[in-house]
Length: 438
Image (cartoon, rainbow, N blue to C red):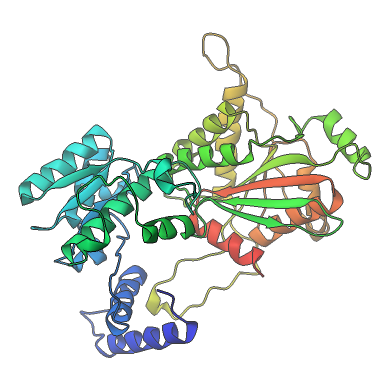
């Protein structure tokens, strides 16, 4: 269901005012996610939606969305090691928390899981005496020549679960005649095909292309991966997407290649060279030593290497709903200590990978500092130079400045296709999309 901005604001303030009237010392305004949950339910009821798909915010058992006591059907997607500080430090504990959405007399579906996660889900289903069906990935041939609207091979796993949930919902709500009987089905109804092929989800395996006259191409690959498992998926998607026939610079940070490229940027010798850049940030509660290795290793195994990695703070700031604050980008310099930690982690991982003996032991690390800092306003005005220096990573103090760097670089190099992977945080991806759409 699409909802207009005016209607959303109407419901927002109606919900806000009702809650505000009941605030007292023992009942404060709810935190952001809980408020949005209440708001969503209010909109669903007021708009008389036929069916609501409720996605949990964090975990399941203690999530605010788990107030729904009699759902029609429950489903659990692939479980990974995320939010461990709240859900538990093992895949089994996390799965136990997520299985909290299972309800008596409500069928449950899931996908292929880690054995410990599968066991935890089965134990909870057994306690409630409900069926738990493990759904295989949707086979591509069932799309009848169409492609999934969401990119990435992992989406066939999600599509398989979505199909199973929809079929079960239709059957349990008296609409069984709309779908073939029995499961698994051999042919998808036309409505299913239409939904699967037209689905879109901003910030997940999304490609955004900027093309300007007399400028190189600037292509953003955006994925809000922020767990080791989702980072693996992101790396495979990015590698497969950019691995097309192309004349690329194998090592853009090589002196000879850079000088050769610049000397010929106005000639026809290079029809369209490519350069890959990683734009990264993650929340401080994440462990970069768990997030970055899958990205490095999977991309490298597919022959995809980043010429430059840029670490940058996000613009978005979390506020309680009742804070009365608005999001303002501060004029004062951002605290970049976390971004420098991310940079040092990246450099250490890269150099350990590059300097490995045959027996697998690491050689001595490079002691050269590879930090790009902006000390003056003049330096910021020439921020496109950050992509020219020979260090493999940089910290840039703001996201708008980082985008400016990238745009300036393709303007200076009209025969270049600059491929930028943005990942590590949904906040970062959302902020980039805001800047790109301005």
